[in-house]
Image (cartoon, rainbow, N blue to C red; front, side):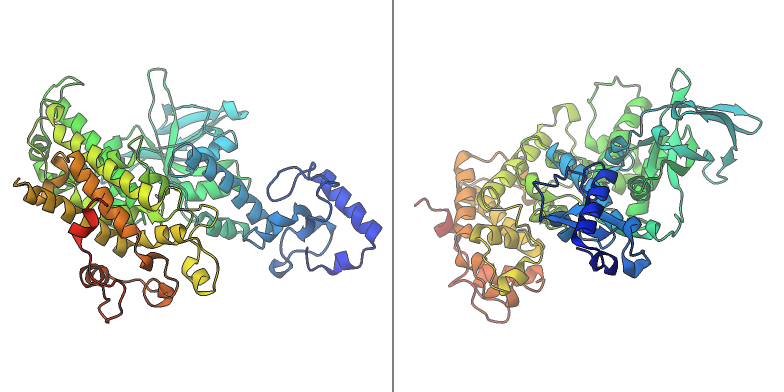
Length: 533
């Protein structure tokens, strides 16, 4: 309930009248979640609160009040009800996207919410510029914009203010999902602070002369404006550009140039896309059929000799992306793809640092069409991830509890289930990396015991027997049973601060921390841990 002198001065009948008026004005829905309000059923569980906070200059009168569910108002996470409503809309979109198997909501999802991204544009080049209209948006005015040319790249572009029905999201060049920083943009725009950089888009005509205008940069700003009611976006539009140039430029902005803070998952996705481009370019250079894969990864690297290191990285990025998108990869049900949120226990960067270092890093010389090594590698990586997930996450991680301030809650005496706490702790970067390192020690010892010489850098390309998979599972089960995972007394000293990889290497080898604190009665004993009970 708002801290409002205006409300306090109203009699109960006047307050009831105001409640009924707001209910009618809001079409019978909560201002924040936009779900129905039943004045009888929800009686005693409703709030009237300021839309714009008094501290931000909002007025203390009926024009600045809204009716909400009490639960929505308490958990809104923003003092401004307009921000709270936008964030609730976005959260629903994000949850829907994740339920559909995506990493989260992107600009395309936000556009769909407001009937955007459903019209195509036709351009006519005349008098040094382009003529166009937005007839599908109800504007038949012929508009003209000059065409500019970038002197260094030769790319041509124009500027326009585009109705959202004509704006499409390009999830190929920009596969990023929209992260939690959208709240900051919402707050900035509500404070009437302008957008400093226009969005970047590209347009290319098909045989009919029309094309989709695809936004590939500025999606967070665009999404925030859409949620706040903006229905036209200023954009710089490249005309019929070479897409591989834009893709490479966008990738470099997030990697070598560090102009954009791309999440690691996004960079891997972009690398995979760039590898697909190189495959196509190689086929065109040698006049190969679309389904001809008689060449190897090594052939591609040697063909693009001027960017040898980059192409080798793209090959590995494609393999990482393939594994992450494997249909039955259970681990990625518990992996946060964008940053380090706390809904899920493990971040993509943790997976990248724990599991992906064991992928073969060099380009193969076997023809791609016959290279069963990559398929075996990806299949076995997914199998290993699934074992890890089934032991530590499935039926243990409680999404309702999450991981927000979990070690603080432990120190405060909150009742956190042991399995949930173990899942959170094993997901720490430095812990997971050491756990998986020990798993591969199990693998190497197995091959050595059986007298088979294998390459340490290509272990996942060796067929694992059922016996070896059994050893891996028994090791992880044995590890999961150690009491330190759920020891609340370690919350401050061990799991409170971030430790380096050497810390847990010492714990698993000796049982003690580098400072001498006993965590295990002795170091990990592989033979004991893999022996069937």
